[in-house]
Figure 1 (cartoon, rainbow, N blue to C red):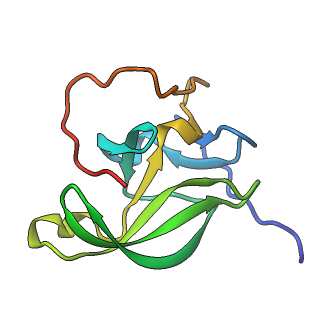
Figure 2 (cartoon, rainbow, N blue to C red):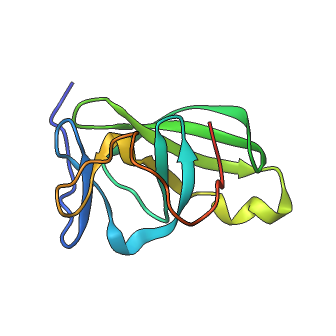
Length: 128
């Protein structure tokens, strides 16, 4: 299959909770007001070390979107999804951006998010 090329990020890094592969930087967070099946999720302007799955239309709280699941290249775990197309004009800002589920990643301080934690503030922007 060949050698795996992995980008190592510097700074406040979010990584895969299973294999510690770097996925995104704190400074690339666009919004912390997203939700998924397991609780909180963050919208990032840029993620690395992921592979993109098949595109599919999903009805979310904010309307219909064409999205693709994203997977950690280190271990293959699903870590979130990428917005390919937003069908509502007000949601176009999401196109090309990715959502990482907090349940699936470790924070910059090594912290993990567990689904029993409560969400304070923000709004339910999306749900899958």
